Length: 88
Image (cartoon, rainbow, N blue to C red; front, top):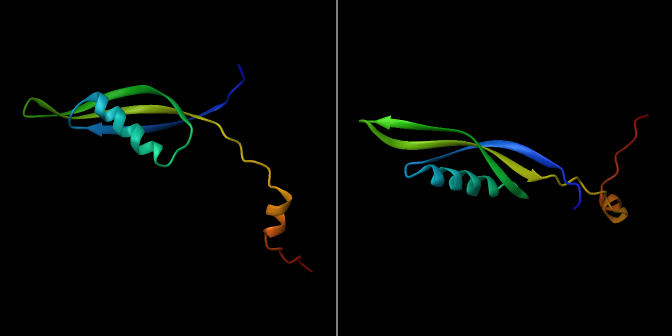
């Protein structure tokens, strides 16, 4: 097994239906802009009550993303970059 490093971020998902839907909503939304999602941890569950009924669920999650270091630039990438003038 190789050693892996993770980055954690926190998101909040909401749903009028259930806690499970709130979790799924948070993960679906986060996955649109975050890569390498690997796990989640429920930090807290809250809800809104109206007329003595639950009307909304709010779930705070910590998401674990597999860390992906920036790759080294290749020589061809460096050659394509514009050169900056040096100061005199």
